Length: 215
Image 1: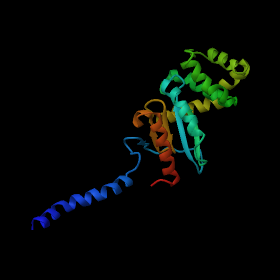
Image 2 (image 1 turned 180 degrees about the vertical axis):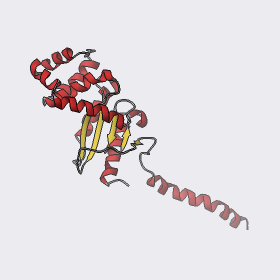
Image 3 (image 1 turned 90 degrees about the horizontal axis):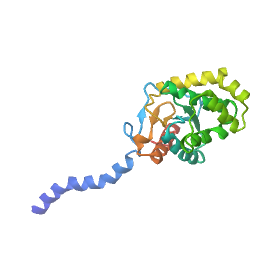
Image 4 (image 1 turned 60 degrees about the horizontal axis):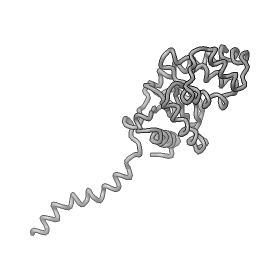
């Protein structure tokens, strides 16, 4: 009788122990509300049929500067159905100048020549860019004439992109930089993921979810 009673007592514990590995396997690698948040309402994307990953950054942000090597390594291995979009965040009016610098580089086809060097100039060389003239001089160092810079900087296309960046910074409910938005539905940042490597992991995970490759 003693053995039967003991068996009845320990059977639930034994079954729970056997089920634990299955539960652990079923648990998602990343959790909504902890590692990322859902954007409500969901925002439209501009990458038809593909998963869009938007990086919101500010050139004056040291965390954004340190995040760039992680982004570059991820870009080298990202799936073909994932589209990466840089978007300068405008959380304060003073951020507009450097947002306009990014879109000016884009309009001139000079992102590769300007993007990382501008980060480096601010954070490694401690240079300050607070006026259009200071940016014009920096672009000139990278092969852009003052006239070409001025035309692009004040162009209708750049004006529109700056306006949209300001609007989407709000619609994405951006709290700080860097922030990453996946397919207009989710946002995450290194504070949620305990670092940049974790943020890249969340990007990969949610890209798979949106591709139907992750339960």
